[in-house]
Length: 137
View 1 (cartoon, one colour):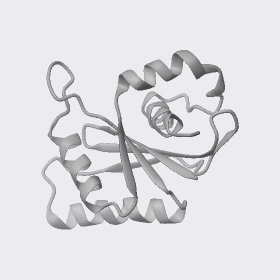
View 2 (view 1 turned 120 degrees about the vertical axis):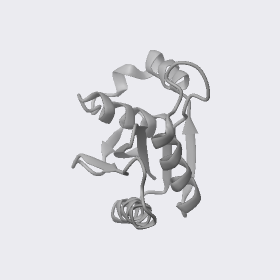
View 3 (view 1 turned 60 degrees about the vertical axis):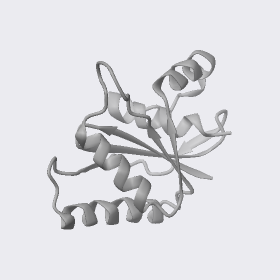
View 4 (view 1 turned 90 degrees about the vertical axis):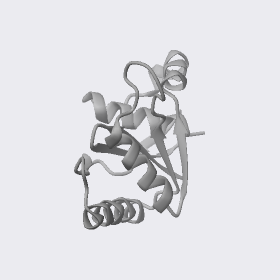
């Protein structure tokens, strides 16, 4: 099963896809993928964004999308950009979408950090990797 981790931040989406198990997994799409959506997008820009997500999922045969759960209140609460992108992806995706809380990823790291040898060094791609890793069996 191919799982795509989509890390939403500001008006960008970083994507990492994994297949396999936690103990033995591989990067499906080694190329770095980043999509952006303007802060005040037009209908055409949203349509293009949706098409790019669908093309990525189709090209890499993604069966499940995992996104970061946005904070609903307090410092670091998700802004308008992530809210808009989350809604667009949830509404347009033909495949299952799960949301994972950052605390869940931190707990998983405590147990399985040694298994994450393919994790990208850049922070945002690393978070997208963590999201995909979270739902590997």
